[in-house]
Length: 490
Image 1 (cartoon, rainbow, N blue to C red):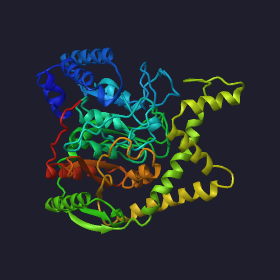
Image 2: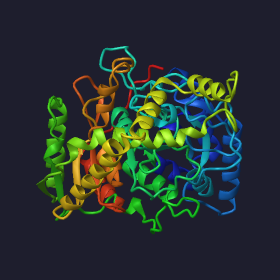
Image 3: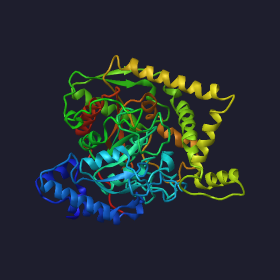
């Protein structure tokens, strides 16, 4: 039974349905794999007893003919999602041993459909990072290594624990969040599939906030079909979230094999950046060829305000973060560091509770929202955001979806960019535009570079048109034939 963790999510559903194994056996196989993977630091907490109890309950339901869409499927949960009775830290010291007495809507949807919780996954503190080196609990390690090398690599961020766990076969799928690329970039770095749905497709209720107008939950899985299955359960209108969309949830999995004949795929010229590795240029060209072979027409499009996307993002996101994180003051929950008076208690609690990157972004956000700078920075960034959304709207008048690289490089060494925030922020150059416009995007693993590390292609779709993303993503997955896995060293 030790190979059960090597199944895809769809394959596990079929095996459970045909009674080849039980949910308990499937869950135990993953728990055993997790216990053998401490070096990856992907899980902050393994909920062994809860997982086995949920698996037993799933087996009992199946025996009675009550079978949910994810019945018996073991999943990892990013530690940004509040889980009833289970510690939730957001990768930060400041929350201490905070244990919610409520369940996030997304995770509640998964348990409603029969899924099993294996544990809570490591992440950049408050989802602020592109490498998962900002966690208060230490960096997550990518299960991939460059050919002939022993140097540990980053898995991407902020959902690095989710991506690492899926790539290392420590869960059949994982929840993640994407504020500027935090699902898609880790997926590209780890050879997995990551989907950022339309803003509002998944409820944000019960997810610890970073930047409320940008945050969106989504899945990381090993295949496009698996991502479609998981996203359907995660999605749906939630009256507890004012930004949740009242939109029907399609059968995303059915779209994965849809014909692309006659579809027009846009290629934005602004995504050809200076210094982009030749391997990524080639992969992009290969992706176009694969889609032409499926009957697509490749068209050039322009997104002229793309060059302003990163500056706008790194004004808007920190501004919203500085507001959202004001609640962590040591008074109501989490860690408190006592001072001589109330002000000093606030200062010491926040100074010691928040990590360096979080403090940096709070300071940036406070600065751009301050008197005299609000109009010069924040309002101007919001105007740029509106222009970026208009660029996409105009581009989609001539095409059905966009094809781009997911990230400007493969995974890099832990520590290589940690002390260079600007270089680190450039990791998001191909992903932030979709967040600023609220559009869906998917990253599909497509090839290995010369060092044997995964590279991904990104598909960006129209608002609420995840089906086209899955259709194009499914075609790219079949054409690329990517089936590489990291060699187990941990």
